[in-house]
Length: 157
Figure 1 (cartoon, one colour):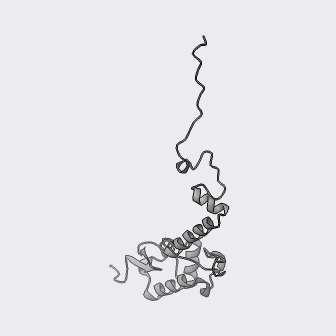
Figure 2 (figure 1 turned 180 degrees about the vertical axis):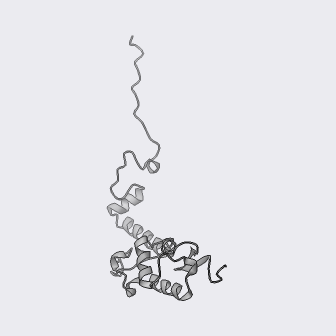
């Protein structure tokens, strides 16, 4: 027997989630939500993480949306947030979807503007976090140039 309350697409935090997946796996499809953060959201909302996302009732979906909008007010620790000590406000916040990309882009622009080491590495298209560049990252630097042999002199026997 088919259950009429099953939804194939569930909308949480302005993201369409697959209703056939477990809720803990479906929440990871939201940009800015990791495994640990989605597990904490499920615990705060008192939702079984092994429940299918399509079987959630409206109250549970509403509760999940509220927790994603303000996770600190529901007891989620600040060390799980993806933006601690925000540059502008100084508060611990958690960003999702398009806000996350926008803020990251602004951070990179600011670093370029003040000409920090990280900003200059971004500007030159080089790795930022100390990786080696001799053998990797050639797609950014150009074609690989190998060692050339010296040409043999024609006068020798």
